[in-house]
Image 1 (spheres, one colour):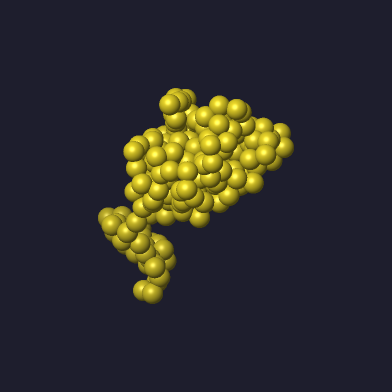
Image 2 (cartoon, one colour):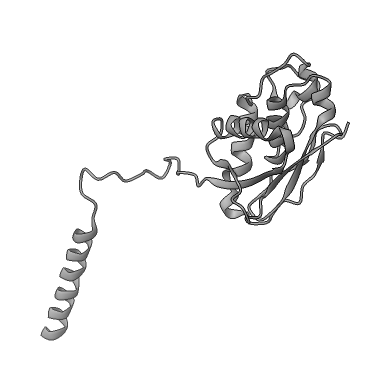
Length: 192
């Protein structure tokens, strides 16, 4: 009996010592249960090797998105890397596959010269079509302040920055990405 009592006392003392040893310091930061969690950033690669004369506009459109949202980053694909977003210049109207594209998936943006020939801003076109890849549909008709209003913003519209609701929608599209690993197949947008 004395032996069991001694063992229990030692085990109890060990548990107390262990819990004291791993307890956080009084001044250590411990997040509360309702504190927002840091979101992982999703990196999507883009390939502009077929963007022809629009490579600079594509880079500016990418920069617009990268400076506007936090949980997704568009990065130029290193040589030999499969890109989730392919940009192809052609003579038609600009169009893109509707995402949100995920790592491992693939969508295509067609940077159509028809809109450029009509006078539309190339950086706005690039940012608008990339918005489709990130999961945003057209919002037509719409004002120039809405990136996804596309051509209804008018030829004089040069706004290539997503508005607050567009930014929030993209953040939402990629907020729960960690739980979802299925690539989105994409459907065509902007085929008017």
